Length: 344
Image 1 (tube, rainbow, N blue to C red):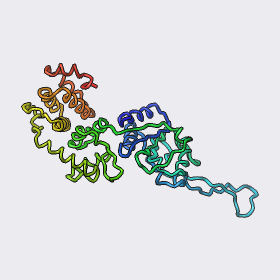
Image 2 (tube, rainbow, N blue to C red):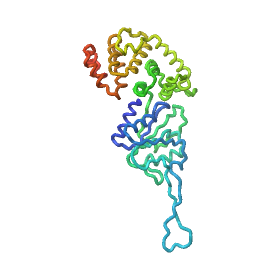
Image 3 (cartoon, rainbow, N blue to C red):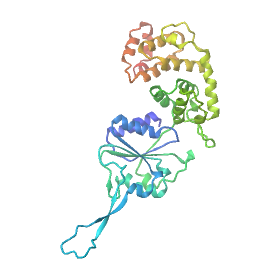
Image 4 (cartoon, helix red, strand yellow):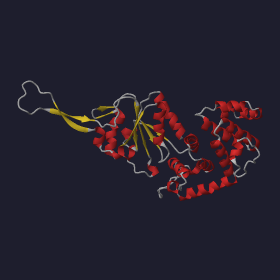
């Protein structure tokens, strides 16, 4: 499933209060941990990230502490019998609601997976019991990802809901439009979506949704992105940046000047359309860009612009912009044809 589909599935588990142990599989850098954390924030519940591969068995079960039994009448001498009580670690929740996330579960050695099995299956470990309202979710890489993972015991695997997530550019773009991913990266990946995730086990730096997010921060600071996406991909991104030199001034289009021709070269079209999407700060600017594209661009590029712009403006409320579009008789026909895109 795509990251968007995974996020929706996990949200449904919370909405229906299904406290089912859930295992998320996927390649490195696809956003598994981020999606789980976003789900917790969306529903206003707690989030505890536990890396079992970094723990010893006693770190999860706790330490045994001797507790003397009460002295009974007639007990002689100073020796008193007692018991050992396991004190659970402080990171395990004791109340409220939330997600206990066991990240990199299958990177933990078999002894730790065995210790976690009781927590996952029975919602308890030692004398500790996980409170009602907490979800036990886990994530891990697959063997084909060349990660240093151990086999998951069959009894443990059989108790999980197994979800597999794969890289998906539309999901990444949807996230990037609201998260501030650099315009040039989104335009470049629109043109070359295959470079969203291209694992290279022989090199330390390769493109993934996670590394592209880091690349966005480097690019905004004027730094080289090769250390996070690799030399070859960074060179392609730099070559793509040259298309901006031949684009019309986007500010004039956003101000309502419709005299610029639409580029013929695909890379320039992606750069122009994404640039208008991300630089339209108001509904009026978005409408001006829309009118420009209606005049000069093929229908598929108008559709791409509308769907991306509405995704970007969703948080601020696209209702005013949609109303302005309805009131423009020149684009009324277009709106009727693409109603599902504009109003969806």
